[in-house]
Amino acid sequence: MIEKLYVDAEASKAVFRARLADLSPQELEAWRGNTLDYRALYAKAKDIHLAVSRRTATLLYILARTRGARSIVEFGTSFGISTLHLGAALRDNGGGRLIGTEFEPGKVAAARASIAEAHLSDIVEIREGDAVETLARDLPDSIDLVFLDGAGSLYLKIARLLEPRLDAGSLLVADNAHGAPDYLDHVRSSGRFMSLDLDKDVEISVATHSMAEVL
Image 1 (cartoon, rainbow, N blue to C red):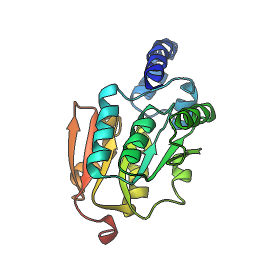
Image 2: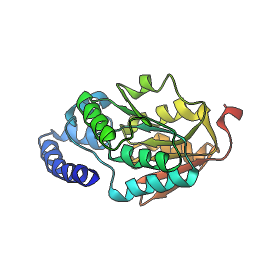
Image 3: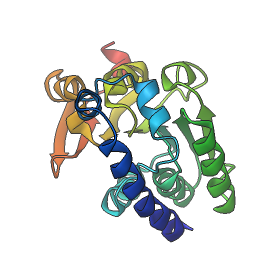
Image 4: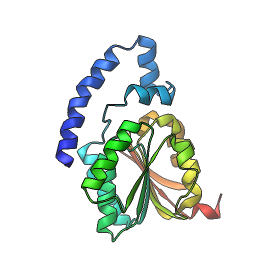
């Protein structure tokens, strides 16, 4: 199933590139600079996988296993490749809860189908809608790992929303982090995290102490 998802993701890249080629110079600059309204941005990519790389997917599994994660929140599920890796890590850790979020209904349906096929429905919940709203309720008291892979303009807002639930050693992992300079400034300069960029694309940050103690 994972292989099929990656094949589909690769095919959708060509469609995505063609779609970008049809944008005006102003729209293209807004897209690249992550200044285009995120609702409009993701509506344009509703059938595009925007999947994590195989390397990043493996990294997520390793980090979740190493952390011994039992509670994970994912911003930007898309078609669910990263979700399947994180869910598998939870299962191999003995169980837990993964809350994923996705704005596009079609992607939500496809991700839920893949999750069911992988027998992870008892572990993974996908919430449909704007993550700023769906992640404002019914969350675990403690979150072991947060994966950010949606609109970069929301990374800092989502991180701040979840920070009170991070313990010492909790992980923040941000894909395409170069598109979220305010988020990068926060995790690198706030004094609350140790942070490292991987291949100038993925930012890995670990909470140095319980956020409940400082917020």
